[in-house]
Image 1 (cartoon, rainbow, N blue to C red):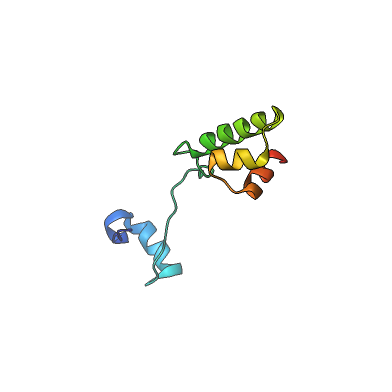
Image 2 (cartoon, helix red, strand yellow):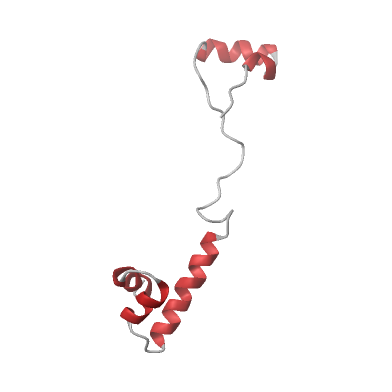
Length: 85
């Protein structure tokens, strides 16, 4: 993260007001928008939802958990969690 001098960005009146509370401190101002949930920006969330739904469907078609784990390169315990969720 690159630091910027507050006097280069803030109007003088606002700068003086902030200095009353935090003179000499390093402040972080977060962006003014909501954070996205994990995987929403990259598409990973949708990928895993679709993968997990496919695993559930194959299990319902009588495919064994061991076979699903081997096919998807997942542990048996992970497949169990997906299937029984």
